Amino acid sequence: MNDILILIYGNPIAETIRENEFLFPWVESLHVLAVTLVIGSIALVDLRLIGIRALNRPISNISKELLPITWMAFLIAAITGAILFTSNALSYSQNFHFLGKMILLGLAGVNMMCFQFIIGKNIDSWNHYQQLPTSARLSGAISLALWVSIIFFGRWIGFTLEPVLAVS
Image 1 (cartoon, rainbow, N blue to C red):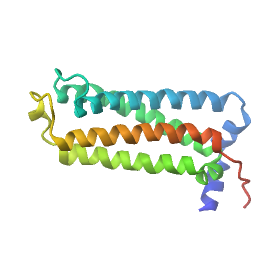
Image 2 (image 1 turned 60 degrees about the vertical axis):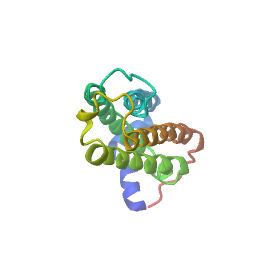
Image 3 (image 1 turned 30 degrees about the vertical axis):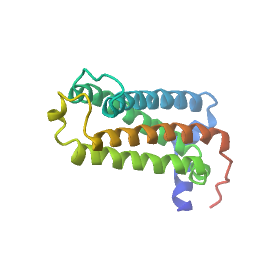
Image 4 (image 1 turned 90 degrees about the vertical axis):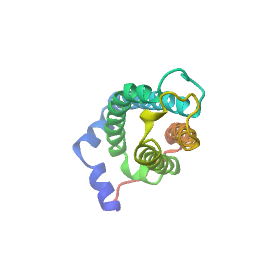
């Protein structure tokens, strides 16, 4: 695994990010903005699922309106996150908060898939309900908790990242 991480660390993009004092902060800023859009759009859907906000709006409309924003922002966040990772792959791969963030992202993905393909497959039939089924409310609460945790873990990466030398 270290050989792969060293290869990632040595690629031209990673070297450019490390050598340019302005590039890392710009990419990181774009990453944070994209993550903010992801979490903001997901939170709006989750708060409707839980039954806290937008109770007079059909859940399927909210979901359909926000889904394109969520996916575009997620794509930007994933690309910028990958670029940031390459700049110091060995250090990130050994950082507790980075690993925690990746695990939480995976769990958020599993929760989203369960909602999309199992819990919310009949979402259009819920449009006239103010209080949605318990499984939908639970999925929204889990999603919100996971994304808040992702923010927490992601924020702590920068404070806890220790340099690891790339030795082949």
